Length: 232
Image (cartoon, rainbow, N blue to C red):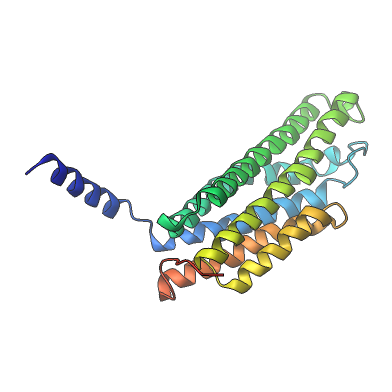
């Protein structure tokens, strides 16, 4: 047996053994639920005004700490969710939109972790020196940093992720066109309207939940197991 045959046989075994399980799309559902809970806990515990005095540290720090403990699990589920999307695209993945799609996903996750680390540091310092932390300059700097990371950059990267994924899905048939059109509309709302609508951040997990449910249903029912290009 020549070396080429051995390599092809090895690749066949590897691709078979590493095939993405059908239930992997459940990671998107898990991510959607976790990130929705995280955003909700943050919104009900931390005032929207980034210049507030920090009184929530004395009353709601436990709720915020719970949200922070959920962030790593949401991050792992999000990575798995991205992997499921790329697996469904396969060779139909467009390099341009795939780069934007993957880059925005990584940036979203990086800013989520960074903002969570900043808020976690504030809670940790407050636990050791509560009197010095409340309404201090250090608190305001950390609070403004976390606010900008979440409400400016993280939300915008979520919108870019939704837009690029919807564009890829539209041209490859990864998802029905109505889900892609909805993704375009929600991404536009996040890009231009997130500053005016405080709860708009929940649009991202809602969209991820919708597309995850569709993929999971498609995997088990077999509506269209692999995407195909759609001529426009």
